[in-house]
Amino acid sequence: MTSSTPWEWSLFRRRIRLSDGPLTVSAVELYPAPDGALRCHWAADGPGMLEYHDAEWGFPVVDDRRLFEKVSLEGFQSGLSWRTILNKRPAFREVFGGFDFAEIAEYGEDDIARLLEDARIIRHRGKIEAVVNNARRALELVDETGTLANYFWSWEIPAGEITVPASVSTSPSSIAMAKDLKRRGWRFVGPTTAFAFMQAMGLVNDHAEGCVTLATVTAARQAFGPPREPDRHL
Image 1 (tube, one colour):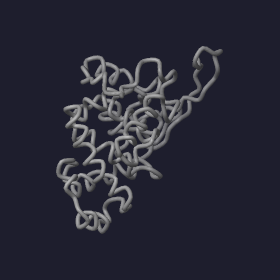
Image 2 (cartoon, rainbow, N blue to C red):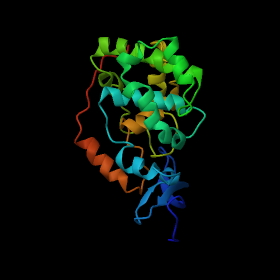
Image 3 (cartoon, rainbow, N blue to C red):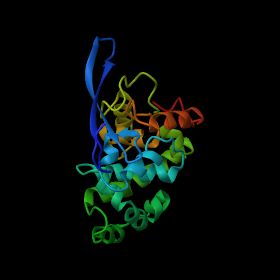
Image 4 (tube, one colour):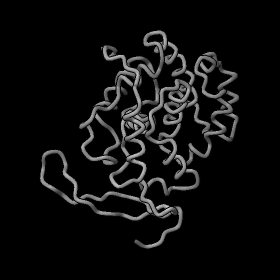
C-alpha cells in the first residue's frame, strides 16, 4: 500500500455478489487513514470527517434532539457537501438553540430574519423555514408516538434490504419513510436525505466492507435495543 496524506484515499477492487447474480468486480472505495487502518473513502474528505466517521456515523441514536438536529442538517446539506455542514454544525446548534424542536416550533418571522442574517450558517430561506415547519410536525409526531425515536426507529432498514454496503443512496425503507414524512407535512426530507439520515443515526450499518469501523458499529447495534412502533406505518 502506498503512503497517503490524511485527506487522500485509495481504491480497492473486491469481488462481491450483487443480489442473486454472478460474482462481479465492483469498486469498493476505502481510505488508508494515518493509523494504517482502512476507512470508508469519505472519511478523507477534510478536517473533522475522520473523527465523525469513527465516533458518530452509523452508531444508533435515540435522543430526540439529536435525531431532529440530524434530519434538519441533512436538509441543509441538500446540494452541498456534508463537510460544509459539519464545519458549520456548532453555529447551527447555537442559532437553533440546541435543536430544541419545542422551542423552534415557536419561531416567528423575526427569528427567521435573524437566521437569514447570520453568515455562519446556510442562509437559505426555504431550508430555514423547513426546520421551523418540521419542528411543529415533530411535536405532532411526539404526541402520536411518544418520542421521535419511536417513529424513526420504526423505519429501521431490515437485514438484506441493502445487499452491498456503501453502494446505494436510497432504499425502499428510505423512500417509504420520506413519503410518510411528506404526507405528515415535513419538508426537505426526500428519499436521499432520509437515507443519509438513516445511515448516520444507525438505522442501517452502511460502513463499507473492509472499513475498520464496520465491526465497531455492528457490535454497537447488536447491543442496542431500538424503540419500536410497529403499527405506525398506516
